[in-house]
Image 1 (spheres, helix red, strand yellow):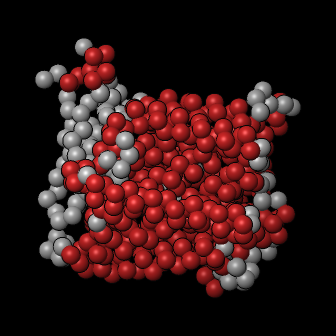
Image 2 (cartoon, one colour):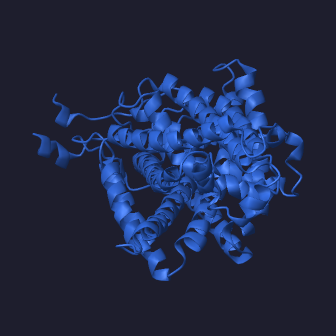
Image 3 (spheres, rainbow, N blue to C red):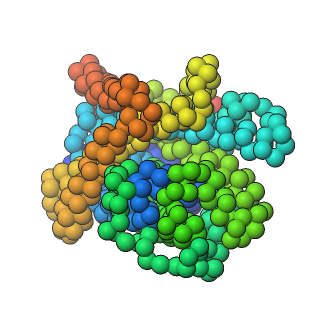
Length: 503
């Protein structure tokens, strides 16, 4: 049989209550490629240049590195159970797959729709922000922007759509280049500050955990620090295309979480020391957007200020590409299960990618973006803030449910893994930590999205997406028994059109 007529069948784990789904051609991406995509989605330069000053300003504490360390510890604990269960969750559905394997198809289906909606909002929000950022950056250096912000947003969506249509290895290469560039800029700044001793000489003050409450709002510090880690679960989304997924996914997950955590903590320490612990909160409050860029001019060279301005744009571009790839694979997997149209689960034989799902996603993103543009709302202060805030609420809720699902799964299948640390202790500790962060998000949601009215609307919308998924599953179970069975067992065929084009 030729490659052009190849079909791809789902895996079957044989474990009670598994989620099985269409599988993309594997052995394409190794640990480093997956880590590149995940860390690129975290946008390290954007976090260091944007979120670190926000943590200082909102928490009122100089102990910003500690907030990142706390979040990293929680996510490492989460990764223990997440990785242990990954070998028994054979599809690329990430959070929803774990929830379905742990609690069944009804709640799993609701979680799937919530995940799709959360990532869609995050992707659209990123396009809005990046369009505004590109327009402002060009205007700063050339006096005016060739296109309005929304023009750049739409153009970026087209470019990302083209990359997403192609093989995942191309995206990995693009993300690798962009990630290395922005990470190098962050590391150069960190080293320069630490070697030169900062403003007042290096100290342990920023690492004093006892100072996290000095500003009166430690919850906000932890909340914004956690935002920098959103997207790390994408390691499981690329399972189908990974080399040796049972080893690659756990390794990539740990490397991504620990690598991101170390980079953020060291960079936050360097930023505080760069301006001086006694001045950090005040400067971050007065000039949050220019704080890190100013440090680049002082400790390295004014040209690094300009380099960071450009790399900040590419950082968000890389972030957009990662989220597009993640959401495309959600569409692909859910198309195979029947929760979304089954044609989304067709693999393009020429590209060996879920190209149809990518095209549909691009169209859907375009519709959402046009609606946002027509509303004439501010791309950053309103559209980005609202959409990203709602997305984070949904994703942390899913992460908390996933942690509980890990516990439920291993309690039901006690013979699969006898290590209590992996199946009970670490997942319970992670659940407690994630539940605490979810509570912080809900209690401060009005601050995040800029008003109580907007907060209530988006909470209702996110909850409704979960309910919609549950209703779809219940309807399928009652009206279409064969489709209900396909939620656990599907067969996906290659795109006939693509087959013809390759003959």
